[in-house]
Every structure is written in C-alpha cells, then in structure tokens.
Length: 270
Image (cartoon, rainbow, N blue to C red):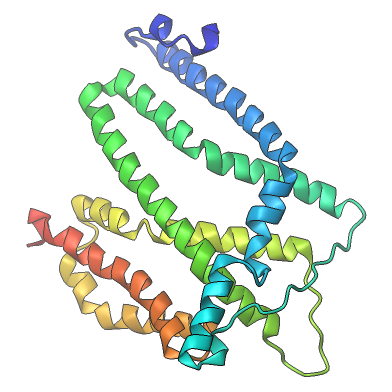
C-alpha cells in the first residue's frame, strides 16, 4: 500500500531528482491500475463486444429501432437504418484472439484516462501550487465532459448511420460485401474517438484564443465554409432525407458557433 500512500510522498521539490521521483510515483500508480483494467476488460468479453462494440449493427439497437419507428410514423422508409443483422467474418487463425487483446488495451486506456489526468493534476499541484492544480482540474472537467458527450453522440448517431451507409453502398450489383470483424471494430472505435476529440473544439478555441493564435473574427469569416463542410459530411453518411441530415449537422456546426461565443468573452478578441 506504500505505492498509494500519498501523504508520505508529499515533499518539497528542490532538484531534478525530486521531480523525477514524484513523477515516477504517479506513473507507477497509473501502470498498476491500467494492468488491472486490462484484465477486467479482457474477462468481460461478452459485455465489451456483444453489448457495446457490436450492438450498433443490430436492428434492435436503440438508435436503429428509433429511426425505423420514426420512418414508419412519418412515411419515410429510408429513415429505417440497419434493418439486417449481418454477419461479420474473421479471416486469420489468431485474428479473434489478437483482436480481443487489442480491444482490451484500448478500452482500458479509455477507462483510465480520467485517472491519468487526476494524477497529472496532483503532480502539477505539488510542483506549481494549489491554484495551478485547480485551474488544470477545471480544464480537465470541461474536456472530459465534452469528450463524453461527443463519444455518446458518435456511438448512438454517427456510428449507426455510417454503418448503414457503408454496408449498403455498392459500386456494382455484382459485388457483395463481406465485412471483417477487424474492419468493423476499427471503424467504430475510430469514429467514436474522432468525434469525441472534435467536441473539444470550444476548449481548443479558448486555449488558442488566449495564446493569440485564433480570433473571433477569423471564425466568423469562415462560418459559411464550416457550415458547407459539415453539411456535406452529414449528407454523405446519412440516409437521403432532410431529418437525419439535420440531426447530424446541427450538433457538429453548433460546436463552431459555441467556439465563436467562447472567443467573444475574451477581451483580446473584442
């Protein structure tokens, strides 16, 4: 338990060795918890794969059912996405085993991310003082909240729509899709992470604005360009109906407008 005894390790840093010793203490705790999480995720295989990662492709997934019910009530059948529970394939002898390991490490890394930031906050507090730790803690809280909202939006909206688009897209009627499990998992995790980081845009705008690299006038100048880009992306990944396109366009473009509002509050950009 000495590894987690924080009180015994609070001391004044005077030399580079003191900094390194304090940093290594934080790193050891992170590594121990990370290994434990990897094991926990690896053991809970059905929960991770069947109930989470593979769920968006199933017709009974909450988003797919909602879109189909909405399509029936509005008379727009194209709104019904992922109506078929298609089969995924593994093409390598050790493919599923290695994929299981890889996903365990990735999911554990996502789960431990808040704890990593908390350890960094503790280290910053020791080195630079309580005030610096509080500022970092506030930024971390905002960043984590934006990441969670972005990941949830991607998982429940972007991922099902993208699966529907890519699976039923064809260059010729003579070409049949056989989707590998590795390709599917890679797409789901990539989309969730990319959209999650995209939701960091307001915080990034705030930081760049404070540093003098970004201004409100710049974002306002290219406001129409941003709207066109977001609308094009939404049109590509969604069914050919206005409702689903708006459903994707509004939140993504809303981030751009929020970034402008964030910069408006900074005196250097007024």
